Structure formats: C-alpha cells, structure tokens
Image (cartoon, rainbow, N blue to C red):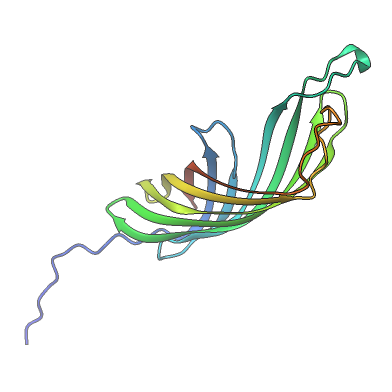
Length: 188
C-alpha cells in the first residue's frame, strides 16, 4: 500500500500565551475600555480582564466665587473593571473575524474646579459586537470592532458638583449606543 502525501500546507497555528491589549474609542482619543490582560487559546479566542479610566467634561455649572474662580463646568470620571472574551469565529490568512463580549462594572465620581470629588453612582454594562483582527506578526495585531453598548447607571447624585441645585437629574438611567473600538493586541 502506498501512502499519498498531503501537499497542502498546514494552517498556521495560533500563538498561545499571555495577552496585553490596549482598547480605545475614536482614533485613540481616549483609553475607554483601555487595558486588557488575559490569554489566547489555541483556537484564537482571547479572554481576560480589563481595566479602564474615562473622563468626560460636563458644562453648565453654577457660578461659584470661592477663591476668585467661577465654576462653569464640571467633570465626571469613571473607573471600570470588566471580564471579557473575543471569540475567534473564522480566519482567512492573517485576518480573524471575531465577536467581542464584555461585562463590566464602573464606579463614577464627579467634581468641579473647586469642590472635591463626590460619588456619582455606579454603572453595570455590556458590550457585544463583531470585529476584525489583522495579525501583522504571529504576536501583534490591530483590531476594529463595532460595539453595541447597554449601560444601566444607578445611585446617581441629584446634581453634579458645581451644577445649579434646581437642575435635578434622574437617580438612574438606562442607555444604549453603538461605537467603534480600535485595539492593539500583543501575545507573549
């Protein structure tokens, strides 16, 4: 009996190991959903835990003349921790079709230029969506994902620091949005 050799080249194996990824929204304008640490399985699936810090400037604060300054704006900050997975659905050459799933918890704070930071509630959120990963080398990839975001934010302060007291906010809110997320992933 003769054995027929298979001339087709075997598909390149996924490099497995420790993963460090940076995620950003908008052309790396902020590290929203920023640092992600985890691992990469032989199937190409990436899993791990992320940590992010986001800041947003709010406007419309009430004037305050303490220390000779007028507080015309305030800022809100969020610190988030989230587990996540990027499922590798298909691969063509150096490009992966992935599906991202993240579930997170965020603690919010608010401040103006004068007052100290105050609690502004918490948020529970999920991000899901398809994406593409281009592997420049077996250890380095760029990615883009279209993310559907659902956020429940509760226990919010009735007003932000520096805001006119008669402009009350709802103590909770539920929002949904779609955004793009860029990423750089390194496998060690």
